[in-house]
Amino acid sequence: MSAFSLRGIEKSYGGNSILKGVSLEAEAGEFIALVGPSGCGKSTLLRIVAGLDHADRGEIVIGGADVAHKAAGDRNVAMVFQSYALYPHLTAAQNIAVPLAMRRLSTAGRLPVIGGMIGSQRQIRADIQRQVNEMATSLKIDHLLDRKPGQMSGGQRQRVALARAMVRHPSVFLMDEPLSNLDANLRVHARGEIVELHRKAGVPTLYVTHDQSEALSMADRVAVMIGGRMLQLDTPRNIYDDPAHIEVARFLGQPRINVISTRVDDSGLVQAGDIRLATRSYLVAGAAVSVAFRPEFVRLTASGEGGLAASVERLEFLGSEVVVFTRLAAMETVVVAKISPAEAIGLSAGQRVDLKIDPAALMVFDENGARLPADVASVSGHRAEVLHG
Ligand SMILES: Nc1ncnc2c1ncn2[C@@H]1O[C@H](COP(=O)(O)OP(=O)(O)OP(=O)(O)O)[C@@H](O)[C@H]1O
Image (tube, rainbow, N blue to C red; front, side, top):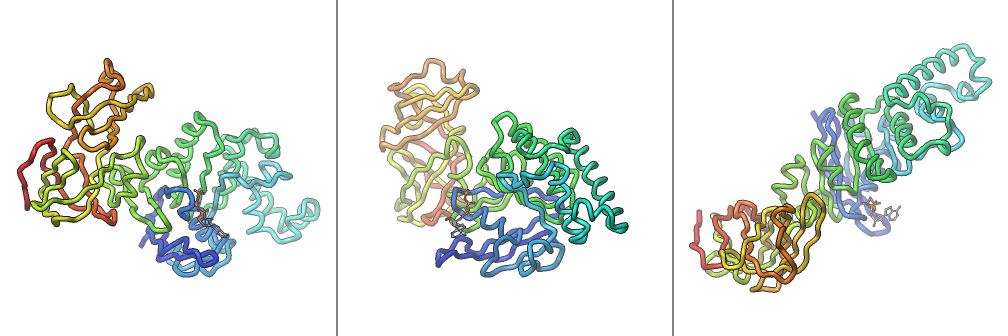
């Protein structure tokens, strides 16, 4: 049994279908990053799991029980927001204590003076204090406990928000872009911290991010949602190397994957201008297909060495790599290559080159974007032999 699952979640706002049957199973202690373009419904899905909004249809199963109709407070789900959502008038210690106080203290027990005078509540308050201190120590924020959010940096507020979410040992952890307000260096550092905390807590986590490097580096599995549908849920490596849908391939990877739209010819070859792919699968003649390959699998060689004739349009030096924009001579198509600075020495705009594309890196997608099991046998600028079956 999975630790947490979503089954067929649907949601519309004012007749606009936002979530179109989203399903997902998380194993115990699994970290799943949820990515997708802006507006695809990531936050809506998280809010529905948290109980801050309700699905029109579908199940949310936590620990074997469907909690879809339970109130947010009865789900034992903790959420960390992009804004941290700390109470500005409370100290860090009081903020961290809020979920425990809400769950364990009576209304009177939560009052600052009266609560301390009620015997049974005094013991619980001491216990809460101890848990807050322990959590603060483990997150290295003990020295901040008396400060209010306005007296803390973004990174410190983010840790207090994490401590508040973790202190009650939730069954599921939800994080909505928790690092997006931090500067680039702190972000990378905080990534490692969150992964470490997650590993220690062992709580299944759904983590929404805009940042694909965050998703690929932190998650056990990455869920790619586009237009309200979960197109693929897989390991970071499979999502990147083996996308099931062209939109998944396009969404992940910087620079973006090269895509050439074309048709299968009468003999089953995929042709695009001078490019001819011979595949080991049978492709239906006349079918519209897209051929895709990542920029790191394109090599540039001197013109006339064989390959696809192209001209260099522009180079972008990025320090450890150089992105080269080329235009294929035969078809006015831009192909992007990612090469090392050493390979880029002597290369300049306007130069004629030959592109060599590793056949093993080519992926073929049908007209609906679904991946075809086409195993590409060769790619050339010349007529290739057809290989079927
Ligand atoms: N309460 C609401 N009423 C009406 N429409 C809403 C409501 N909440 C969200 N939407 C719409 O639902 C769609 C999905 O929004 P959501 O915030 O879930 O997207 P997202 O993938 O999290 O986007 P982003 O990455 O920009 O945060 C958007 O078109 C948004 O305008």
